[in-house]
Amino acid sequence: MTGMTGTGMVLQNNGADSLTVNGNGAFTFKTAVAKGGTFSVAVSTPPSTPTQTCTVSGGSGTASANVTSVQITCSTGTVAIGVNVAGLSGTGLVLQNGTDFLTITGTTTTTQFKNAIAFGQTYNVTVSQQPISPAQTCTVTNGSGTATQGVTINVQVTCSSWNYFPLAARFPATPAGNRIYFAKQRRRQSDHLEERHLYFPHARSR
Image 1 (cartoon, helix red, strand yellow):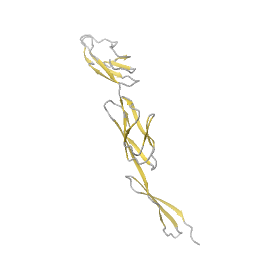
Image 2 (cartoon, helix red, strand yellow):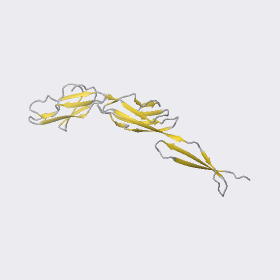
Image 3 (cartoon, one colour):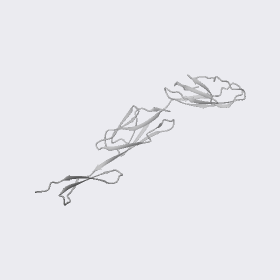
Image 4 (cartoon, one colour):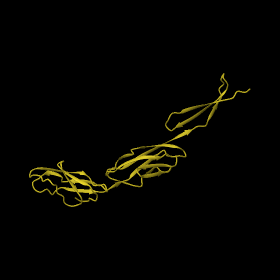
């Protein structure tokens, strides 16, 4: 066993014989393998605090004498949570991953969270605060998963804005008396035009 710095490491032989390992160096399973019998050593529980990734070499074969070929190598590593932002024009956008917060400005398109996460640790990026001035709605894709050695984390954040048009007034004549008809239109990027009608009674002249 080499490179182990965490705790809670458990190895297993032939899917049944478990061995808790507390440090680097030689290790021996409790149950011996008969001469001519097979062995297959695997990592049942990797170390934690810190989280480590451990690999096994020479872990399977047929025993003809005492087996000394099994090597366990552990490594500690982290990966940054990268963020790509598109469509942001407002201010005050805040993203969150657990207790880690990231404030993004309107000029930022690519950034990352301050704290990298260890291999094997899960992440879940959400929008903690939507941008204002102008008000926008931002959504997250590829925001959750498990950190894996050799795999880059790229979270995508896409923001869209509501565009408001000037208030238009129309004055249709009706038998019951005049009433003012306002049409207020609004449109969001990539959406169809919507129209909201507001009616206000208009006093008839005497």
